[in-house]
Image (cartoon, rainbow, N blue to C red; front, top):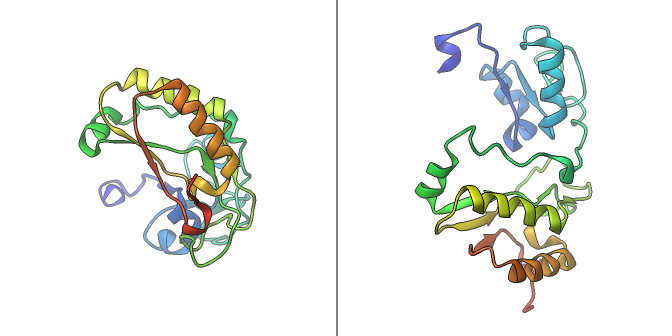
Length: 193
């Protein structure tokens, strides 16, 4: 609808759908789609082009002339800034859903029928935030958004790294952030503990 109102407005997609369905999104009118992680690609496009008018071939950027590029460079997840919760009315989202969404990792290192196929980095190692980073971000989230809600760890499979989950849970129990959490998992990656 935005492109229909302003045909000169460039549109670039990113996220799981952009990574797995770039040709379809390009056909729908997107000028470009990020395949993989967006941080470095989007920054480079904005820095070098200012707009999406003169896109050149680069890893991670699908265009009509290169609809299947190599994936974008991966980023160090502990080095990413905290989300800009003021960019969208995140408090409104929390009030409407009774959840705050949190990402503690990227990727998933198993390629099988349990996955949400096709994951872009399904056979590459998962990069997980340190427990310290998760606690710092959660503390800031609770400072900005006190109240009653649940925390959704929206990782592909939160329980993939058993030792990390046990460590995080021990630190959460000690920190007492006052928010219950739920997560995505797989039946073969959980046990009684």
